[in-house]
Image (cartoon, rainbow over all chains, first blue to last red; front, side, top):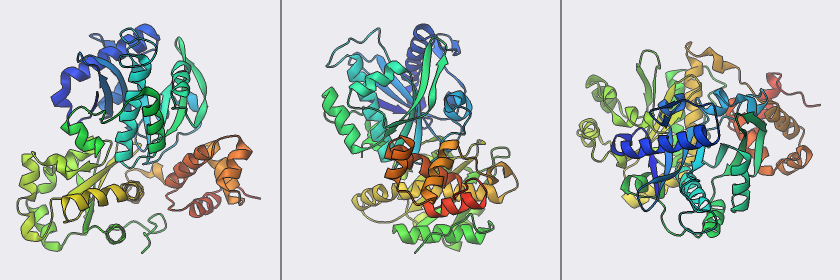
Length: 214
Length: 233
């Protein structure tokens, strides 16, 4: 189930947000060894203070199992300011209909492999569906996502292959980061849904429904 | 009716209001407004096509200090339908008397962020059935996004606060794509030449258009040549 949490509704979802920051600490700090700040077991950075939108997947037990952070490329964002090396020194793309997705992760310790609910593949797909439907509703047609080669392969295998890349993959701690382009389109969403077997509304509540579902 | 290309005219209140007015006519909405907050002073500056009476009432009552369509929408990355303010007391405080001025509380605000922490908000309103409004706002949302960034950048460029925006910074890939397009190649051709997908060509083109403040690719190519950013043979 997907929650879209931004600076308009974050007061209502504080514990969910904190759980998400804890998941990010486990994934990006503990497992992937990225050079990120962790305080009280939570990973946050400057961009979390710039009013991003978080797409959060919550499982049937109420645990946060996946997330992604979205920012407008017209304003400050990671590819412009932090991951510039991925772009080989080139200025970033900037468009009101292109969003940047960063900190995309799923709880690999809690989720299983294979297909069906409570798997890495299912939650990855659910987060992407939530993000793309939210983007489409906003008139946003494309996303540039900072991902690692493992996630890249997951996407390629799940009916969700990037249509292109900008810059080139770069070493970041224990892993490599790269910038992938994906269209926020009905076709792509249909492909992801078909692959993961996800039908119906993925959004959790009336607020997410109002802003994202139609 | 075409949009005014704000990058070719010196910024002025009249031009910005005319831009919004033409946008409204083209999209079939009633009123439009734009507001930006100075990131340093917090002062709100705006342009609107509303009637004089509502503008005066709005300014005199200092509604721009509390208006959630400005202050809350600025916190969102996505356009905010005013339906989201249904339970917001401040929204009702602003729009309580709007009806007397013929202003509808049915609208949507598109937030735009600039690279220096600047934020701009383009709003449009229309009184029609809720179902019609959902359909209309959905069909014009992409155009609103492009208009919002065009207007916001023009407003910022017109001021002396953010002169950095005056010269667009194109990436090598954006220049390359523009260069081939200027040489008459189709997006498909450009994709084949550069070994990237057509969609990747398109996303670079769109980014280049917006950086150059151009509404069309032809215009973007012309401007890039004028600025010496590309050199078609």
